[in-house]
Image (tube, rainbow over all chains, first blue to last red; front, side):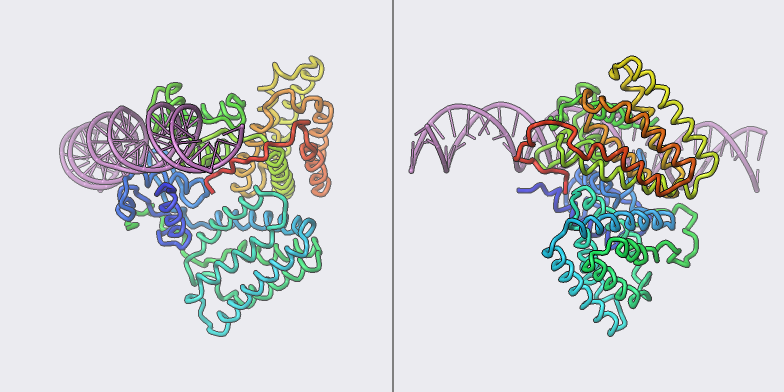
Length: 229
Length: 229
DNA sequence: TTCAAACAAAATCTCGAAATTTCGGAAAAA
DNA sequence: TTTTTCCGAAATTTCGAGATTTTGTTTGAA
């Protein structure tokens, strides 16, 4: 039934978010077609659609790439998340009912449970997939009671790009204790229905990413030969 | 040089924004190809790229359409504009210098001049193109000194969709006197560098669109929900 | 050696046709 | 009449090859 497009799209999205392709690496339709046993044109279409949601960059006459990792981009995405989640959470406080509260509590409980396991084991990697999904669900539930479909869709798009920017695992996982505390603080603000407090806490939670999280070398000037696959 | 794609893209965008196609009307690659003397596949690609910026809706296995006009969409777009322009304008106040002030003043002057002509002639239609461009430039300059490329790009995308939603001329042109006053008020807040005042005035200027501007029948319940996902 | 033009290889874009899916109306059943 | 099923037409998706453009290397002159 559903065109094979849809399957390829979903799979490619997953591969992109989990960072299977290196930052800035080329995505060649002719290569990718082999993975899906279809024509290059079909892959090309999927890549176009992925560029729709910012997971792939397209440049006229020079093809598709996985986005580069850059401080500027990280900064931008963070700023957008702060704006969208603050606004969305405040609207949710205003418009959401008990039902929203309980869904948020549930999402937090699940997330919290995983975070505890991470803390005690001391290693995030084995739980990274679980944790990622749980965090995403918590943040999406936070803004879910707001009355703007567009705001929610935009947030989802930004969130996925954000995740894509820091898949390089070891990144920010010295931060777990802070994460746990901050998620709790956000939940509390929601249950207290305190909008100003919510804005502050959402900001504090995300603003950590505004300060350069990667004490890395500047990216490889040589706009590298692909070698992507 | 640049692929013909680019030209077709620009032209189609223009046609969409100016409302040449009816709301919700189908966009068939096989028809459109005739306008551009190219193959259907090329048109198809352009349509995909236009769906990137929300000017076209795509649904698997059932093609492309110009977006439907709906109060919900109008509401969403307005809310997003308020958020983006408030934030962007405040950041600009914080980060922009005299150079920004002067560009904003210039943009306002141009806009103001056109608005006066409209008021005295009593008819917007002949100046609609000019006014549209001037208004867009004013609003884009307003947020231009902020430090987030992504915020500016997102605003541009939303703004174009917003415009597309109310091209049906007669719509909100009893509002000209208000428009003139409000644009002035926004400029003043910028020059005073008063962020709180700016938020209020941007909100007031745009919020008019939150109250149903179209005394229409309630929208057709059956919604061909769309947008790839 | 340095720079520029020319060439070769590779990647992207465009095309039209074939395969698949949806849409609309007619025929059959209730 | 109303509902369901089936069929043909129309629209969408997929394909692989040929045309165009970019990229990398070599050649030749300054």
